[in-house]
Length: 318
Image (cartoon, rainbow, N blue to C red):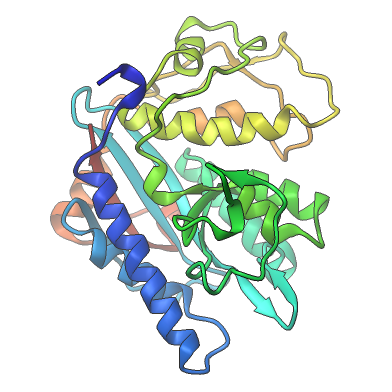
């Protein structure tokens, strides 16, 4: 097996189980005359299905969150023990008549703003988990682009997909009428986060730091692969923006356990903030102590940055 064919034998099948459980739930729910499904219920079923490969703790705070509950997910490299964290919020793909929609503007945009601010406090990137129903539900959602020869909106693995929140904000302004199809085309199926055969080469012209360049240009696995996956989504869309890329602005991450500390491009294009530091701040040399304590005690960590968390989940990836 080559370096570009890294497999995650334990985690990926578990994530497939999770997506399958959510697909089955949404299909049955809709078959009984309901219009849409509860995002919290879909998340609960997903987590129960991926256990024990993915350990989780629920804080039962759905009723406390004023504008949406977030889950903190950590992917831990089984060899290096490096960890990559993401703040996840669920969003449903909804159909109203002939119109498909994903409501990133919920509460006049306050929910998206709250998600990004919470991610800043936790020093991790923010992503959406898109619950898109099964292929039968999506069969009338049209997209003229394909993945692996299949129209992206009909892809069998798209039922639970992941999209960086800052890209969601960008697409929301760019494709108001075709937002649902654009989101599915840009997103990565959850079960594909930890695997990536034939990892494509990055254009790393704005990267000066050798460690960051290595992340982008060499095949990765484990926690670094998840980070690279999210960066690739953002850099692909950044390449389509007209703003000139800059190579003279570089960031430093003031985190004691940061894997990448300097030489991080500050280029932001038309995003809300520079995308490289937003993603790479989630890469840590080890799992933060508060995560280990939470898994052991099943009690939420203390601090304002954890106030609206619905729970925490950890996956060990090879």
